[in-house]
Image (cartoon, rainbow, N blue to C red):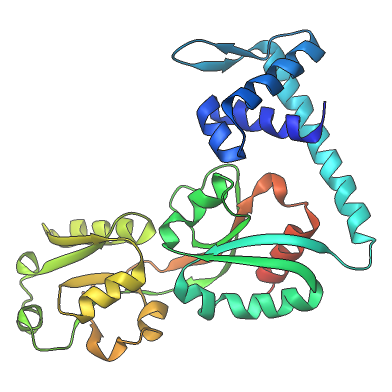
Amino acid sequence: MDVRSVELFLHLSQSLHFAKTSRAMHVSASTLSRVIQRLEDELGSSLFIRDKRSVQLTHAGLRFRSFAEQWLEQWRQLQMDLSLHSTELAGELTIYCSVTASYSHLPDILDKYRLSCPKADIMLETGDVALAVDKVANGEVDIALAARPEHLPLNIAFASIGKVPLSIIGPTIACNVRKLLVQDPIPWEQIPIILPEHGPARARIDHWFKQMGIRPDVYAKVAGHEAIVSMVALGGGVGIAPQVVVDNSPVRERIQSIPVGVELEPFDMGICMLSRRLHEPLMQRFWQIAANN
């Protein structure tokens, strides 16, 4: 039994899906099958019941999962204890965040992190913040800056670093949307709406529609808050965006916040990573710096 085999088994014991574990753990299906077969041979017991439709843990599999979680935790704790006694921490971290967060929230954290871990290599990936938690859960990145989702996966650790207000925004340029926004009352069901594809912002604006009794005229569904702000600035419709994105946008002069009579719940912005990796020295140091920033 080795660390990699245990990690593969534990992931499969949660996903109960060979293809999902293969993709998330970056191994071929045949390699994963061989690893599980080798563990079963070493234990002398079947760990999974497999058929064409489902994968389930056997009684032996449940017992081994409990043992494996404790064993892996102790192994990682030992690694951390030994690493923290070395002069400097080294390694690579892949961080995911939105373009805006890369210059609004991340720089201060990274400045302190580089001082603490000068030999650590940082790989930065930017994109739609709504994808951040999934990227961590799927093992695509080590750490993400993300808005806390309504339902946080059980295997994800989250530390808040601040609140981010949200605004419903419209264009200031002369256009049909602007003409509708200056009416009193605003004829919301006639105004084209630019929605986030998914994520916490989508949940909030959907909730606002229900509160206001509005059946929205959806003009477009867009990935990324920066793209929503750009489409609003061009007069395409009304959207929702974090205020920090609006404030840092190059087209902010073409955008205005629309008073809607109901306060939108702000984002709880924070960092997230897999709970089982909290004791890895580089991850732990980043967590400590970000959470106490």
